[in-house]
Structure formats: C-alpha cells, structure tokens
Length: 418
Image (cartoon, helix red, strand yellow):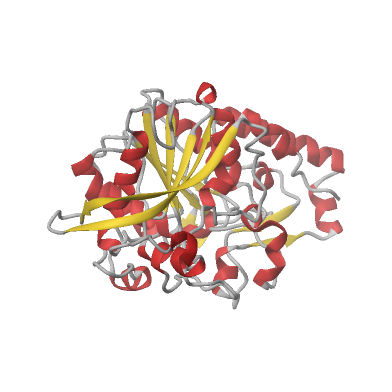
C-alpha cells in the first residue's frame, strides 16, 4: 500500500478490519469552476466489517511535505478509528504524491519520485492534472466512497457522516478548502485541521504542484471564515505557534462551530511519529516526547459527535505568549493551552522548539530536555509522589475532555522512570 508507518498501529486483521488500495478516476473542475480535467489517483482504504462500522468515514488528505505520500494522522488516530469503527481513507490528492517533485521539508535519503516513479508497474496508469484540481479530486473521491450502494470499497457500510482531516501541508490545504471550496460544495460534515500555519495554501495551477514555501513568504495571515456551517476543530502543537509554521498571526478565538486547541509541550512532529527511527534525524537533542497523539484522539471523538448534532467540543485556553515568546513555568514548560500529564506533572521538559541552530527537520520535532537527578529530587519528594501527581493530572485531563478514558492505561505507562 506504500503507506507504512514507522510506528506499528493496531492489528487490523485481529480487529476485523481490512485494508486495500484502489485507483479512482474521473473528471473534476478547478475551484473557480472554469477548467476541467481528467484524473486517475490512488486511494487507500482501511475499514471495519460492516457489523463493526459506526457509519462515519474519515478521509485524510495525504501529506506530501517529504516529497511522497504519508498518512501522519492515521498514525496518531488509528487506535481511536479502529475502536470506534470509523472507516478511513487516505487520498493521494496532490500532484507531488502521484507525479513526484520537490519536498517542502527535505529528509535525507527520501525519494521524490511520487507513486508513479516509485513503482511504475503498479502506479504507472495514474495521472494527476495539477494542484488546481486537488480539491476537486479530494472531494470527488470522498463522495464516491460515501455514495450508497452495494459495491465499492465500503460495501455493506451505510456512510452517515464524512469528516476531512489533514496534518501540516495538508492542513494548509484544508484551510483553503474550508474557506473557498466547502461553501460551494458543502460535502464534508466536519474538519479536523491539524498543525496549520499562518496562511492558506494557494489554489494551485494545472500541470504542477503548489509552491507552499512561496505562498508562505508572500501570503497574508489567513484565519478561517466566520460563517462556518459545519464544526471545525483546529489542533495546534506548541511548536506550530511560532517559528517555521508560525500559526500565531492567524490565531483566532472559538466560535459557534469552531474550536482551537493549542497543546502545551508538543511539537509539530514527535517521538510518537518517528519511534525507533529517531536517530536517523540526527538531532542534537532527543525529540519531543509530548502527548499530542492522545489529545488528537479526543479531538476526533468530539468532532464526530459534534458533527452528528451532539455537544460542541470543549473550549481550551490558548498558550501564553508574550512578545512572540512562550511564557514558561518554573519547570520550563509552556503555560496555558491544552494540558497533558507530561507538562502538569513533569519529570523533564518537553518543548515544541528545538535548540538554536538545529536543522529544519529537527526544528519541527522539538526536543525533550532531561532533568538531572537533583532537579527531579527538588521537584518530587519521591517517585511515588511523582506518579500520584501524574495519575491525578491524567484523570483531570480526561475529566476536562482533552484525553480519553480508553487511553488512560497507555498514558499512565508513559510516566517517566527515575
């Protein structure tokens, strides 16, 4: 399927799920509707048996920042998707993912061939007309998957809700989708926009991919429109607010159908994503070991219920920033924002910012600053004292709605040893 994660996810076979990939083709229009083009792209589908299905389809705009398709939100959310019975589809919506090209974030040794160059025998018949048509492709594939009928990848499942999700570059594109595409097509029932930056992605041109870096240099801060008709939950890591991602100029407050969560002690990418391959990054410090994965799962849980007419997701205080810098507590962790036990009962400092002089990729992964035995002894009377505080912080975050009870054991297992 060419979407392997470095972090093992749930055992789909044991859970009664299947995974497969398909070619999806058709004719779509650009966003103004002035031009049309044919396309043939790849869609990956992971789905439960019909009896286990919730009726919700979660469609991820696959991320091409490294020069090839990746599914970062599947990695973060797979446990919640599987236990809730939400079918998932990953759409190769962008030109680079299919045809190849440049990378917004260079990773040493990564191929920039796209699907066709990487496996021409399998994907050689795919054809992407350029990112002017990416939004049309994304919606067309999602619409086809959700259409009623006995045949197709989701056969036997009655799709009642369709949610769009995407992280990093994909979040920039979903920002554009919410602002400029959804008001006309009104297909998706909710959006989880994860780690967007200050601007919206450009609409793109035929025959090429978008130049997101140029758009960020030249564009103006772009908040989401204020007349939303479906719920939108924006989740930002601490590391997304300033620096390379720089969401801060576009920061906006909650509204009737908008919630913005800023997670203290989290980075744009983290150890949860990279796992045992951390050493390949060559970062001077251990990468961020925050807990945004569990917050994202809670965000999806709230968004799905909200899209069905349930209560709105809880609101969260923003991270405290003064003169462009985070206000940090005596432990070195950022104040405000969505709180997790690693920042409210710390045994080290988790930061969304890397050390000065770190590479671009290391900057996105933040860092974890170890404490000396003397620092831990000054903070905690004993390890038992620390664990008690960590457990209480976990339960407080569950009660507040920012963590899920089903993840409690996994979160408690992340208490530091000393």
